[in-house]
Image 1 (tube, helix red, strand yellow):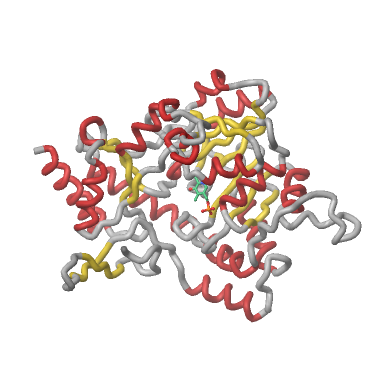
Image 2 (tube, protein in one colour):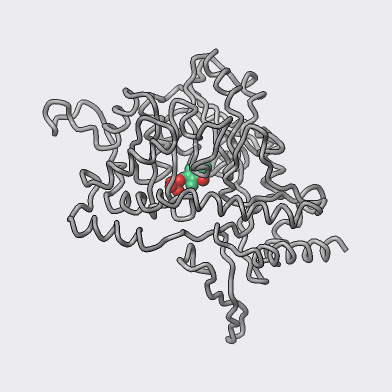
Amino acid sequence: MPRAWNATRMVEFEFGSRGKNKIKTYLPVATPQLGQHEIDYVTEALEAGAISGTGGLFLERFEQRFASYCGCAHGVATSSGTTALHLALAAIGIGPGDEVLVSTLTNMATFFAVLYQGATPVPVDVEEDTWNLNPALLEGLLTPRTKAILVVHLYGHPADMDPVLEFARRHHLHVIEDAAEAHGALYKGRKVGSLGHLGCFSFYANKILTTGEGGMVTTNDTAIAKRARSLGSLAYGPKQKFMHTEIGFNYRMTNLQAALGCAQLERIGEIIDGKRRVARLYTEQLSDVEEIRLPVEKPYAKNVYWMYHVVLTAQLARDRDLVMEKLQHRGIETRPSFIPYNLQEVFVSRGLTRSELCPVANRIAEGGFYLPSSPNLTEEEIRSVAAHLKDILGKIRR
Ligand SMILES: *Cc1c(COP(=O)(O)O)cnc(C)c1O
């Protein structure tokens, strides 16, 4: 297997058996963009001895700057996107007996977070073109126990928020955005993470902006921010530090990671421009292929194309794994689409959900995969990936 998230774009890839391994250049799906500022800031944090998650100039700076980049008043840095999601749900008091409407096609961390709180996730099927939560389905899933909606801005395209927010207002529900894949994406000119009551970000190594591992909760609500900060740092007592009045978590980001984040934030514009350039070039190359659905950009959206995700349609969907395997043999890494909640073994086997609940997401999961999407891919590399893909599809068709 190729080494994951190698710092260089091209990594050596060994394959073949019978002792004699061929070495080929290999195009991974994503690599972090790291440079001298990242090294300088982390070094500065180290030299200052500020290495933990309590205190350190970079932590405060990163929280403030990232929140303000998102158009939010507050940011609470966390150890991961998963812990950001859990903290967000804990901070608004989601608990046993509550139902949370969740976009079914996502990283399962989104669903796990609901389950950590002992609440019940209710999967919502997605739109055919954006692959995001379909707001038209909310009404039919509402019960007296519904407390919140957890939308996901999948693969960098913002969900259609206005109908979600309107529905939530009417029924007094909280709206949480899982923006782990959509740093900097715009909905009607506004940044994701600032549209609902809370936004949750991930800074894992392959995300648009990285701190290695890490995350953040963003919000404009001062009380929620305060509560998230307290719960995420062991809920130390208000009067006597070690006298606790509730159960907290240690979900803190370290100052070392925040130093990395500050450097990354300086280049986020460049990263997003790169992602959009890659997407435009792929779309130019692939728009004449009938059997592939390409990512869209709705009139209300600025897509940041975290990953260039495509879906093989109809008959070809069944050959998805074969197509991916053939690309792999030509030195091109791909990843399959997420598998929706309603198809997950862990939940179906426990009778928590049924596979047929979300037919649109099921079709996308069957035929979907994403192509190398690093922002610094050259035009030549993108043309080459597209040409290989077309060639492989042509051969399968025949
Ligand atoms: C990556 C991701 C997460 C989890 O973030 P981690 O930092 O890996 O914990 C959650 N939701 C979505 C949509 C993601 O892509």
